[in-house]
Structure formats: structure tokens, C-alpha cells
Length: 332
Image (cartoon, rainbow, N blue to C red; front, top):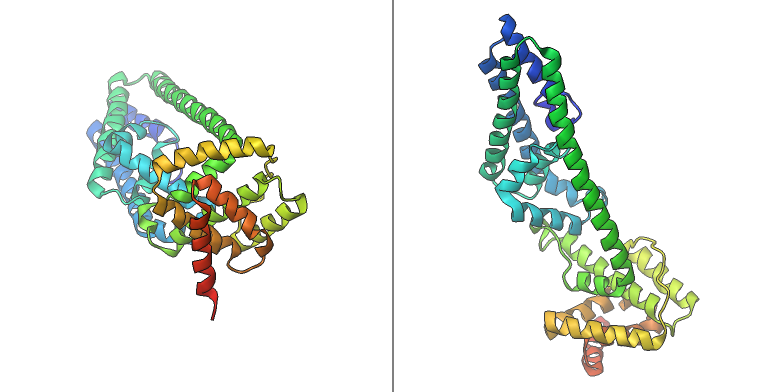
């Protein structure tokens, strides 16, 4: 059960270990034997899941199905957090019901070393199952008390885990509402820094993710432009969705033109301080390539590329030079 717990979290491995330790008082088992069998099985199960994820996980998430399960940006965030909290985070997580099972596969997915992964997992498992074995053997015949104690500990840890999860969900909801209020800003930031996990860097998946981010920014510019009619915006949206597989989110309501100009000027100031001109021009190039290179929505090109230059704090002449170069490269 301790091994299966790494694949099926609801398995009651803790109660099984306590029962094994309890039976040692009747001479049917030995506490050390119970502990060693449990610990080795749990560590072996975690190691197996970790190694499978490390060997095959990247291949899975490079496929279309894998990207639908977890987008490259989500994988990049997971990788960043694993690297941020490292050994301590893995150690603590293995004490939390419901979370402990996902630690090994994601550690393998982000390519943490076996020592940094299995070391803290093994230590946490030894402390956890060692404690359960000790309690079970010391309390002896009082099985109801043992079971109640273990249930209470797991319930407390479960409540703490649920509280952390609830706080995370509330934080996500607040961030999502804030993101919806500033869709242009977040789309621009994502397009300038299209995060992908390190194991997908320089791959077709990473390039596709960058293309999708640039296409989404063009779409948000169309939604924000009061000069376009609703039919124009829908034409741009349907073209980009079909070409880049963008999700069908509710379109934003355009602000009055003076408010849009003020907001864009604020964003341009932020972007100039965070990103160099070469990075911003590279984004203009990507936006043109993903949205206008096939000519399907060419009649809206002038307006949307003008807005892109305004948003990114670029001179009109610089944007036109990029467009002219790209258009020239398509001519036979």
C-alpha cells in the first residue's frame, strides 16, 4: 500500500502501517520489519514514478495532448517553483496528504537530480512511517486509540492542506480578475517573455508557444481598438483562433479612445524600462508574422501594427521598417 500510495493517493497506507505495528504486540510482526518494508516500498514506489516521469514526461508534454493537460507556461511555473523551494519544499510536501503523491512525478518532469529528489523523499518517508510504527507498537493493544490518533493527525494535515489550497484558489481568483482588467498588459508581458520549461527550450513547442502569445496580443489589440467594428474584430479573432488555436474567451469591451491612449502610454513607459528596443522590435516582427504574413486580415494590418508600436513605445518609422523588411522577404 505504501508503494501504491504514490500512484493512488487515497490508499489508506498509514492505517495499514499502524495495524502492522499494532500486531507486533501479538508476536505476528516486528516493528523494525514493519518499518523497513513500508519505508522501502514507499521509497521504491516514489522512485519508480519519478524515473518514469523523468524519462517519458517531457515527451508527453511535447505532444498536443500533453500541452492541453498543462500548457508550457504552466510547466515553466512548476519548474520555477521546484527550483525555488528545492529540497526543503520536497521534504515538507511529502507530509501533506493529497500533495505528497504529486511530488515525485513533477520532480522528474523538471529534471531534478535523483539525490535532490529521493533524498528528501526518503527522509520524510522515514520520519513519517517511523513515527506511525513507533506509536503503533508503543500503544500496543489499544487499536482504537491508535487509529483515532492517526486519523486525527491526517485530518489536521488535511485541513492545513485544504486551507493552503483554498488560499491558493482565492489568490488565483483575485489574480485572474486583475488579469482580466489588464488583459493588454498581461498579453504584452507574456508575448515579450513567453515562458517555457527548460526541457522545451529551443523546440518547436517553445516556438509555437511564443507564436500563440504574439497572436493573443494582436487579438487583444483588436478588442481594444474602437476604430474597428464588431465585425472587424470578429474577423481578426476567427482568423487567429483558427490559425493558432486560441481559446474563445469573452472579448473585452473597448475603452474610450482617450482612456486607451492614456493606458497605452503607461504600459509603454513600463515596457521601455523592462525590455530593450531590440526585444520590443522582435515582438513586432513576431506579431506581424503570426497575424499578417498570410494576408488574410491585411486590411487591418496598418491600424493594429500602429497600435502595437504605440503600446510598445516604438517609433512609427521603426515599426514600418520591420514591416517593410518582412514583406520584402515574402516576395519571390
